[in-house]
Amino acid sequence: MEISIIINNYKTRGFLKNCLKGILAHPPSVPYEIIVVDNDSGDGSVELMREKFPDIKLIASDKNLGHQKGNNLGIKNSSGKYVAIVNTDIVLFDDVFDRLYKFMEERPDAALVGPKLKNPDGTVQSSCLSFPRRLTPLYRRTFMRFLPAAQKELRRYLMTDFDHNSTRQVDWIFGAFEMVRRSAIDRVGLMDEYFFLYFGDTAWCRKFWANGLATYYYADADVVHFHRRESADGGFLSKAFWIHTYEWIKYLIKYGKYDITHPRSAGSTDSQ
Image (cartoon, rainbow, N blue to C red):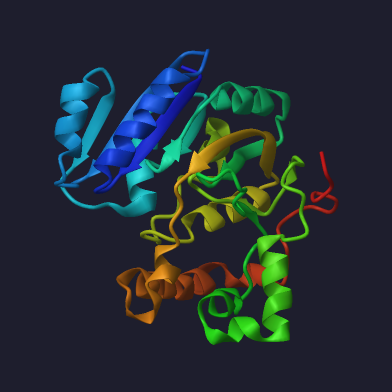
């Protein structure tokens, strides 16, 4: 098996259906498998899988495992040389799997690669970022974002000066769509289940870099991502905001020491 496609679903039946239709319309040309983990959605997702996609492996959890545990469960039940983690709100229109597969085959230093993520209107999302510093989320979520120091930090974090038509090594990639080398997972471990929903992708990339393995943004492959920043959209009153804040504190406790000593090797930001 060359590619294992892992889809972690929670109450997104419509997105799940469209995501699977896109994958089946543009599947990898190499041997692959699709594994859907349902987190006790209760919205008809399990019934949809059994009725419309009976040949796809379904793991029906009896509780909501969250982003990290749900994807880890899929990885544990997969066998591919590469693991493609795909959110349900992703839509494919071409051979993105083959492009990422070829890239990984040609770059043995790469642990993880992510494609260009686009909004439905065709604009490019900021899907590759620099590692956050201690105040970065606070700058993004509060009135402090208007401060000159905050604006400078956010430009660094969001890589606003980066040409998203260029392929390069980056600190970390949004986990909405990423292809990961199995041997790299065996080396550093699965996604950190210390987190429920946020910062797991950031932490994983840190672990890859700390072990001499690279993370890449690949500009010559793209997908549409129906992205919603729930932790920001709902403001202080939203549940997502407080989950994000809590997990940011947890992230600082466990990974904050890396804010000073950068895990990447010198020269790793050069365009490829």
